[in-house]
Length: 115
Image 1 (spheres, rainbow, N blue to C red):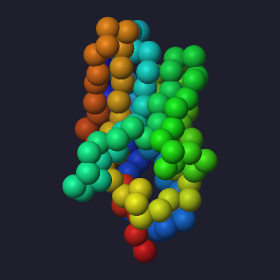
Image 2 (tube, rainbow, N blue to C red):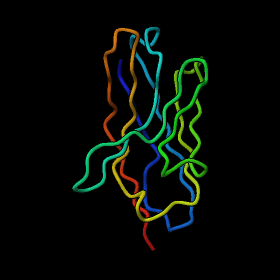
Image 3 (cartoon, rainbow, N blue to C red):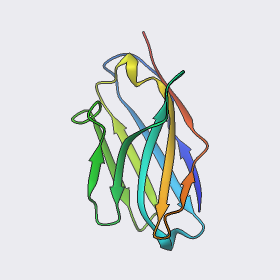
Image 4 (spheres, one colour):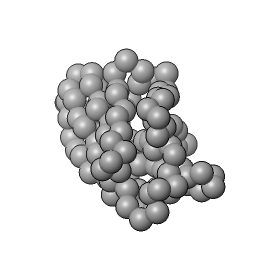
């Protein structure tokens, strides 16, 4: 499975940004897609995930501000980020997990929240 992410950039605090990720390859086996992030000096953490059936999970720090959505027909997963804070600054990685418990990662896209 190959993942291509896009949409990062610089945004002011309180602003919005949308990340998109497209999966290709053996996508038939993918059951969970999501986004992780890694800030400087910190461990990579789960931001949000969504199953094939549309069940979602969010980190407490982003719940209510971020929305993950998935289009199974197009093999895409989006992350709409609203009310961004400086602490949301990180490299965001698209992630996919398949039914064989293998994980796949996109190339990472930088999100910088700064005035």
